[in-house]
Length: 111
Length: 116
Image 1 (cartoon, each protein chain N blue to C red):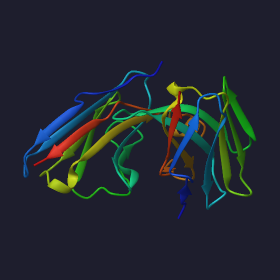
Image 2: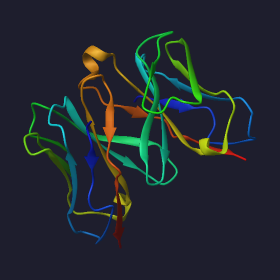
Image 3: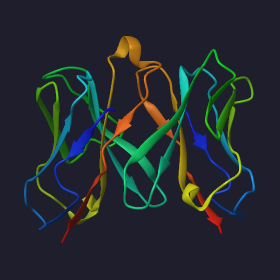
């Protein structure tokens, strides 16, 4: 059974610092990995999707890498801003079109 | 932009009531999903649907049922609400299975349900 872990559960950084968020998964037979952002009391917003054949994906200040063999993905957010404060979740898609979610990392960017 | 709309942001219901949670998407997506999100337990899949009138159980279907009479609408039904069904309920949609292996999942804003 696929298990997805995000460590740490919470992270606090000063504004301007680069953020590094980790996601690990136990079964490397995945179709893709997706990163989401969730603001308090809201739904999830899709940030980046990395296909299993890709090594990384970029969107603005966000860069996500994928290493299937080691079961890891990293989300980098450059030059963090207070508006980046949110919970970030990763999810992997395997056979059966099901997503398995990690528990999320709660990020606070202090002005 | 894809829009997934959940009809209620907050609901308060009594134990034993039948509860309907509605979700509508406007991008002609074949796949629709219902999750619940609880502190410490993360997101758990309740039911999903690949097509009209089609449904499949997720990881925690007990106490729930679903209805998909039209492609754009996916309803979650709590047959007899219980206090342990107090939770945040999230609806999501994505493109059909063939393309959906690399199609992002789009979520609604959630319905916070309290059962008293």
